[in-house]
Length: 119
Image (cartoon, rainbow, N blue to C red):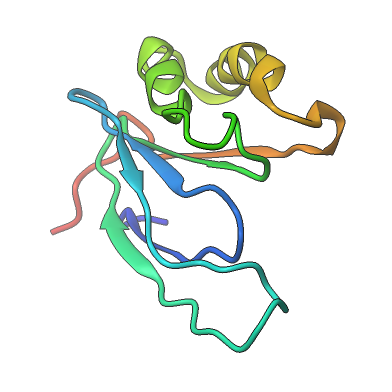
């Protein structure tokens, strides 16, 4: 938690969205077939969060198949918010786009803006 180092692996979920304090959001896409569908590896993707950065995980796809993922843009619009206010704002914009919003989880990890970079 103090270093900001993260590892994300996915199994059938939409990819994580990295939201830096400044700059465009990035989709951290990697292999991740559905769990239990067949034998597969789920290699982690490694990243680094810096003060003010966020990482979003959504358990349901926020787009129809073939359409661009709106989550990065939604997250960028609300990046200046922190904590629960950020999650609430992203959820308000993203949940109407989710096929089954009552079966959806949105998780945000945030590196505190006042966190000192590790030595």
